[in-house]
Image (cartoon, rainbow, N blue to C red; front, side, top):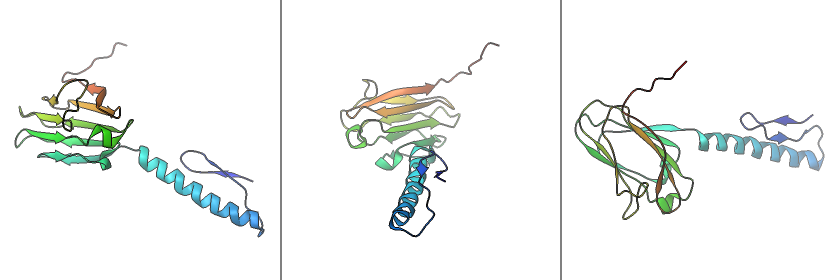
Length: 151
């Protein structure tokens, strides 16, 4: 009977005898399990911390960068949107209550929704950026005020 992988339910063929097809099936099942784990890792958000200038890189894919500007304002230098490639997503959040800003700085002449930079000024203010292959686009952001939902 076939089984499925843990995270994305890839169907793994049944392996139940010592013939060549089952040797191939064992190898395929191992590869599907590895692919399943790799896909989960690639799509999970992980966190990083910054208290001074942060140099972005391609390892920031699906990363939440938590910025503490208590000791002073600083920049988050984004990886090139071209190098990152279309679909690359990164989130940046200011986590302190100081008046110091965190400036998101695109590479060279690249922009964030047409602007030369984007500044986080309030505690818990954050932004999710997605590369379109040339520049950065804001997918979402958190405001500096609480949101109240009606019943």
